[in-house]
Image (cartoon, rainbow, N blue to C red; front, side, top):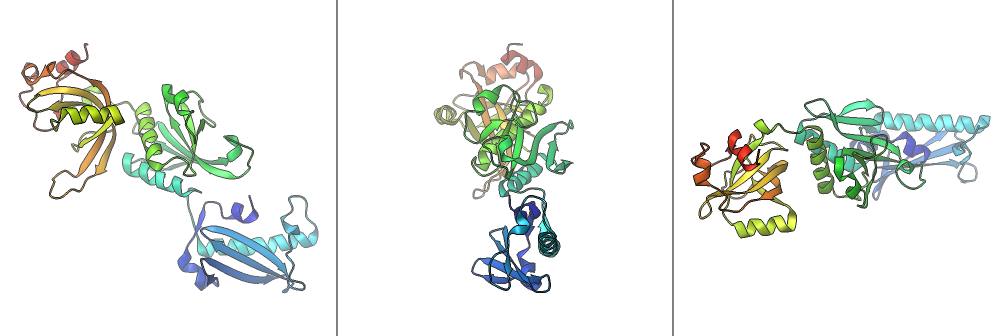
Length: 338
């Protein structure tokens, strides 16, 4: 990691302030120049694509002076150059940059996802560790900045990673590119993912949802629903075979982790699937539809359409299924053989 990368880690430029500070825009880069040590040396700072680099040029022969970058005890002159150079970097950082919690753009996006999805505000556990807690105050995700070699390779460069709980799924997940044995936590129940866009946001978001479920199981008595769904059983069967999940209209009260028994109306008039909510609050805007949000349901079990018919449901007080409703506890026990 260069001196500039270390100094501007977790800072992003405020481009609206660069030109007024003295930077000149040349193509896609912003360049600032300032002399130090009684004009003996010229410092050139370049900002391009959020990356900061710099040079110190000898004013006498235009050669680059690099001794101040040596990672060992410096002489008096090199120390003076380094001190003056860092003062310039500090002033630029104070006047033209904004502090941020994360180093990578993917970490920023996933933080936004977590805070909006679960209403879990980032909590600074350590200077390089941000944790997210569920309503039971248990961690379900941690984003931290570590040396890449802690997970893979021998690079001393730092990267943002996210730790997520997986329980029994850990072994299979570790076979995927971009997923690693967990750093600094249980290696059997947690995984680490480097946030460098190797894995798409959508994949990591699903793993975040699973982690939330694994740390905050929804009580059965408050999270089981009968949900009506369109009566195209062939389409639903094919979708579950291909994807193991399906989108459905969401009731405002249904939460991630809730169990949904899918009820197909005529000609079936029966519960045909048991599913679990793995995503919710998915925006839906389609014509004049009154539906505002969808939820993603993973298949747990399929039932024969003649098994849990409306006639049987009536014995448990369910006379009709026009919208999502809690399932009577006795009916739940009957379906689950309890």
